[in-house]
Amino acid sequence: MIIALLMSLVYVGILLGIVGGVIWFQIVLSKKDSKWPGLILPLISLLLSLSVTLSIAAYYSVSSEQTTNQDGIVTKVGEVTSTMLTDLLPVMVVSSFPTLFLLVIYIVIRNKKKHHQMVERMAIHDL
Image (cartoon, rainbow, N blue to C red):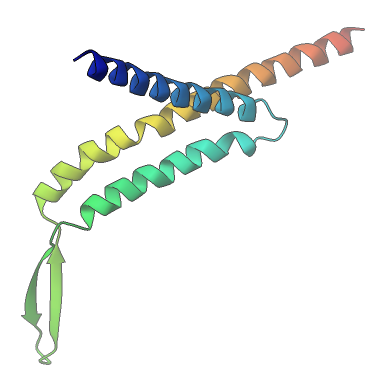
């Protein structure tokens, strides 16, 4: 029982370390002069959330029916079931939280940096 508790604490510590490292790295990248490095981690997070959503969507079967038009051409019409949409929407929202969190960090840091630069320009201009 105590070993399981210690292992759980170790896992929580590792997880908190990884999350803290990602947040620190996002702050460092957002403080760069160029705006593009700060968008790397949100882009990676977005791609991961899309891959999670699309991988779940791949396991759903899309119902299809065959129709024949006047020329005798057979076409298949697929329908996305409402169950698929109700299952995928919460997954997409929850998996997008890290992306939104990283974008909020990026926007806050960039706005602070922009404000600091404007204050510097005004101080130089006043001299």
